[in-house]
Image (cartoon, rainbow, N blue to C red; front, side, top):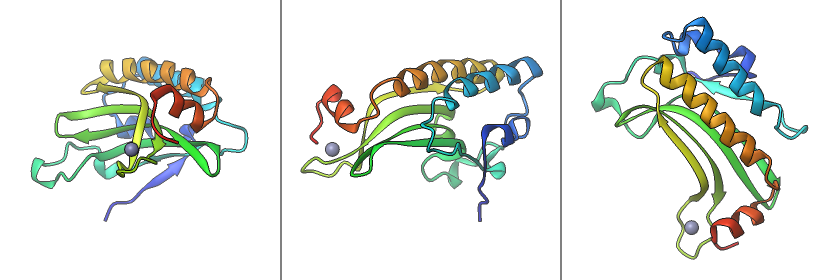
Length: 162
Ligand SMILES: [Zn+2]
């Protein structure tokens, strides 16, 4: 059994999830996240989820899809055509990775599950790459959250059916 915990980013035990973070990089990560967490629509409560048992690199044979360490998502748009802006750090077959993106529901004739209108990915094997990735992702998150909060807008941008 895995145990999920959740809180605002202030409650995320960053130094337990990423023991390699020194004080300076820890501060950079907190500042990067704060720069986009404040842009969530007022009706949203900020929620980050994490799994302490996923801190050690998993054994290859135990992997079934990404094993998520830390994640957040923001549901935006109107209720019958909403979309998500997501960010997570997870173990994948190529190591620890950050990914972020604008995720739309698939309304194609053939069901793809979802579509990423835009996305950001970075390998984050160590403290330096982790701090850099949080800052790069934060730049993207601010840009995405600054676009119209409309799935129709993103569908038009990427030319997927509405
Ligand atoms: Zn589709």
